Length: 195
Image 1 (cartoon, rainbow, N blue to C red):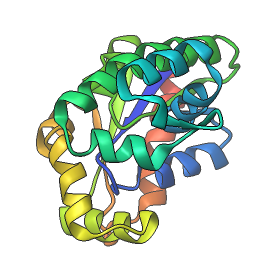
Image 2: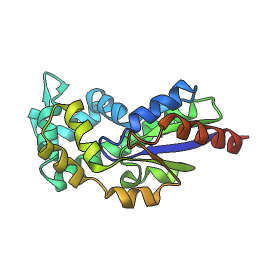
Image 3: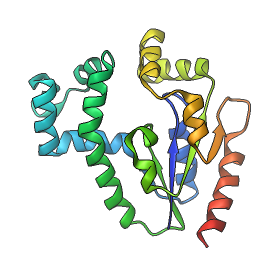
């Protein structure tokens, strides 16, 4: 079974692309959702997060995402620290999930495929590319945050051009190029490769 990564910067539209693959019957692992679930349910992760970020990281046992976001989005060192705690657990969880799948190929959707090193466990990686102005606009709407807050988050991520250069395929999500034909074309290629 082919293991395909799907990545892109904040607001690039990778979740939209993942949903199209899902509609085509392809299993999709959403690393962002999985990591939040693990941070809420894994006692080992909870303990490590509290040790490094304080008791405020959880309110009555529930992850305080607002507090944690404020900590990490201000400080690249804290971002790296949180990632070093959460990434290994998410990669392990993804591996277990992949072993249970039965399809010609699967998709692992993750913003930080290259940064986490999980690209080593994948056969190919698709990048979703969008103009930065569109990414800012989408993220402001989705997360109900300011332009400056979005820019601060973008500044903490790998440079988009660099990330796209590392990808095997690039889907352009600029609201001019149609998404579905791009996904269908890759879908056919992956089905052929999986035979």
